[in-house]
Length: 317
Ligand code: DGY
Image (spheres, protein in one colour):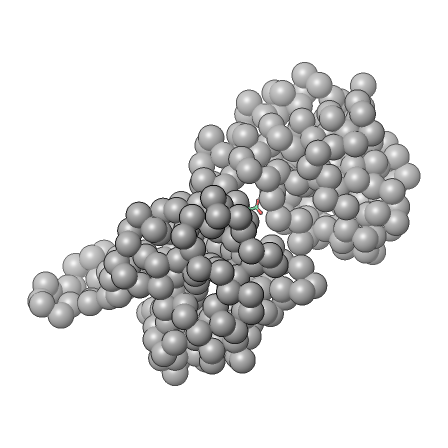
């Protein structure tokens, strides 16, 4: 029986499935393992079921025991893993696409609504019972007829586009390549990021974090947005230059932000936590029971496919 290290606590049904298939080292207290502890615990294991909170950088991967053959990441994003380092060590890396598209797109829409309709200020006022209805109280931005710029039109971007279209938004997107007509579904393609930014009344960041996208939304990019645009990010914090975005909020160049992901999670730049126009969530993208169950099942199936066949359809390196 193969031996597996599971770095984070999973839902009960997923842990039961793992126990029926593998000799597993579970993390019942959901301790956040240091890199050294992760290396230590992986001794004698054939694979690791990792999470986005595990920093599997070059140094860590180079110290993993020879027996480790797969890092099955419990996420669609894999920016926490150095793919090249894993490849050098002949370790397969897999992810969990598709199963979290709907849940993450729902949060993407919540960020747009929350930021545009001033939900953070509204919640604060309602909880403090210090609000007074008036014709101009917390007037926000209506989505109907507003242009939504989607940066990264993969599965999540397409689902956000579908829901946003039903809310009356006009969809524009920038992607490495233009989608076919069916996937595009009337959305307007921008080959250049600058061109997308110039029409994005609301920007939704949906692209993966990679060497090419780190700090892509920086000072120069933010200046290209229409005055008073809204910026939302449901992908990865690394894509946004926080200082630049907070400065743009302070100057009212950006009207509001809706964020679910951050650089250096769980620590947020304090500029966001104190800003009244920041609608912020703690990385809830895939956080529904159905989705987390399906993600962990897929992470387990990825391992099984790999051990049985030597390959995996969700291998990313
Ligand atoms: C992912 O899978 O990359 C999501 O961000 C998890 O919530």
